[in-house]
Each structure stands twice: as C-alpha cells, then as structure tokens.
Length: 66
Image (cartoon, rainbow, N blue to C red; front, side, top):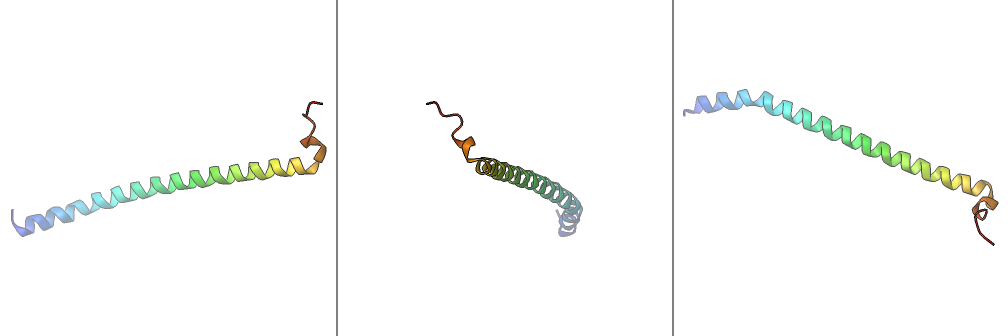
C-alpha cells in the first residue's frame, strides 16, 4: 500500500471517529446527569425527613411501646 492510500483511508475514517466520539460523550453526559439527579433527590428526601422529625419532637417517640 502506498502512502497516499494510507492517508486517504485515515482521512475517510475521521468522520467515523468523530461520530463515535460524539455518541460516547453524549451517553456519558446523560448518565452523569441522571446520577446527579438521583443524588440530589436522595439528599432532598433525607433533608425533608429530618425537618419533619424535628418539627414535632413527640413524633420521635410516638411508636415506643411502654
């Protein structure tokens, strides 16, 4: 194979590389956003539970058996 043929093949493969790179980065960003959304939701739920428990201190001991 001559050098010019190798260069042509490399040039023709560049769009394929860019397309694959775009798809990989897009899926990585999508996964990262979903993970961050789940973490924020879990943190918000935890804070909500803590605030509910601290509003009425008797709720903390309501389920105790005597």
